[in-house]
Length: 447
Image (tube, rainbow, N blue to C red; front, side, top):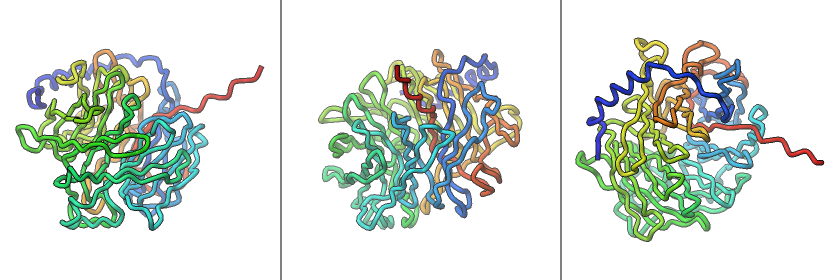
C-alpha cells in the first residue's frame, strides 16, 4: 500500500509538468454539460443548468439554458451516473426527498417532465446517488428513513435503502438496507454504482444524518452493500476495515466499477481507497489499497473506459488526482491539479472545495463542481464554480481547461455566484451533480 505522503515528491513533479500546456485534441465528445444546482439562499427555485461544453464553440462555458423545478430548498445532490438512451435525467433533492425527472433529448429544449413527490406511505428519505438499472428503471440511494431524527437509538436500528423508480419517475418499490448480520453497523446508502455484467449494485453507507429532520452531527458509516438489480434486493453487507491510521474507512462515499473486469473501488472521506474482485461471490471482501492521507476527504470518482486510470476529487486537499490502476491492487499517482488557486494566475487564491465529478464517455474530460452539501447535521461548502479538466488518456496527466471560462467574468471556471440566469434574476446558486450530454440523434429518414 502506497500512501499519499509517500508520493509527495511525485506530486511536485506532476505540478511542474502541468505547467506545460499541450495542444487541445480534436473534439468528438458530448457538447453539453448538465449541472444540478440549488438556489444559494433557498428563496428561489432550484434548477438544472445546461452549459456549453463544446470547445469548438464561441460560447464555450456559457450557461445556455436553465430549467427551474418550481420548488426550493431541495438541496440538489446527484444526477444519474450516465447518459441514458432515453435521455431522461434523474436528479435527487436530499432535504425534500424529491427526485426530479428531466427530458434532455434536446438539451437546449430540456424540460422538467415529472417530480417524484413522496406521499405519507414512503419509508425512505434523504436521496443521494441515482443509477440506471438494466431494466430501464433507476435506483436511488436513500441514506435515512423518512423523519429520521439521528437519536442514539436510531443510529444502528434505522436503516436506509434503495428506492426504485420507473423510467418516467413513478415509484416501483422500496428495498430496505437492513441486514440482520450487520446490526452493529450503520447501513445508510448514499453512493451507488451498477455492474451490468454481474447484475449487482454496490452502495456505500456514507452516514446517517442527511435528512431534513436530523438533529446533531452526521454519523459516518464504515460499510458497503451488494445488491441484486432484478428484483432489487440486498445480498450482503461488507465492512471496510481500517488501516494503520485507524480512520481510513470512515464515511465511504463513491463506489465505481471497472468497465472490463469485475473489480470495484470505493473511496472514503477518511482517506482510504478500497478494492474488491469478489463482489459477485457469496463472500465479498474489500481491501485497502491506497491511503490518500488524513483530511483528504475523498468524494466523486470515475474510471476511464479502458480501466487504465482512476480519477478522484480530494476536497480536503483541494485537488483532483488521477491514478494509474493498471494493477488495481497497487494504484500509482499519475497527476493532480489544484482548485485553491486561479488556474490562470497561480498567485491568486480561491476557496476550492472540489467534490462532485463526472467523466465524459471517452474518458478525456472531467467536470468538477466546488460544493458538497448543506444539511442540518453537516455543512461543507466550496467556491461554487464548475471546471473542466482534461485527462491525457495515454499518460493520466490532468490539466484544468483554461478555455472553459465564465461568460461574465472571463475567469477560468464557470462561477455560479451570479445574479442573472436564463430563468430570471434569482442570484447565486450552488452547483452539485454533473453529467455530460449530447442531443438525441435525429430519426433515420425513410427510403
